[in-house]
Length: 241
Image 1 (cartoon, one colour):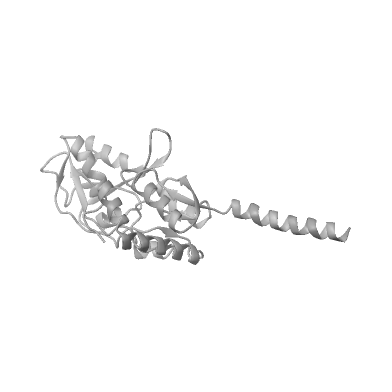
Image 2 (image 1 turned 60 degrees about the horizontal axis):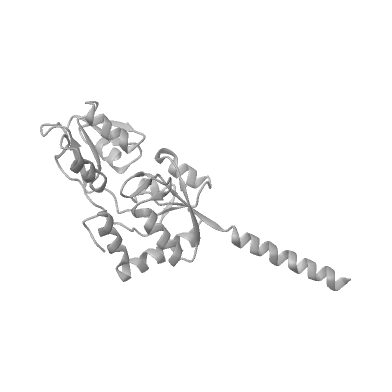
């Protein structure tokens, strides 16, 4: 009888461990609205550069991962509160953000931001400039002589230029280039500032082991050239590792 009881206890413990392991999923938070970095495809799935990158990083780190879509405005608060475990959403590493969360090493180096306008004579220096809220571009504009107008989504910043609400929009060149190519009424003007310290994965400050695992996986991709191949595929940056 004792043997049966002991056996049942051992089975219950091992079954509990297996169940815990099977549910140990790393949730990857992204915006899903910033192509080619991340977007939702025709099948309703997260796609783009960071989806492909994130899946490969999880494979190399031997982690089981799933993707979670979250609006940009609340993407850091929802990481901190535990709604997902990482941010992989074209997020530049900045000192202000590092006060709230940790970052892995960068997986993309800083690339120029471009001003996109509807006229070659657009006042990009002191006019009204659109930017997505809580971005490095918004912070940059706020320090210039221009008037900043912020929007929740990148699509709204483009609409602001098209409808005359803003003289220009400042955003990542990789996001704006395809839009400019498709719309002859939009053009690049002004300077091309380089802002931020590269793009990395956001991690809660308490998750040191997870940060280290993803950093090691990123370094592995840098080392064997697969990260540069992926960057070139999606035309994310002109700078290689």
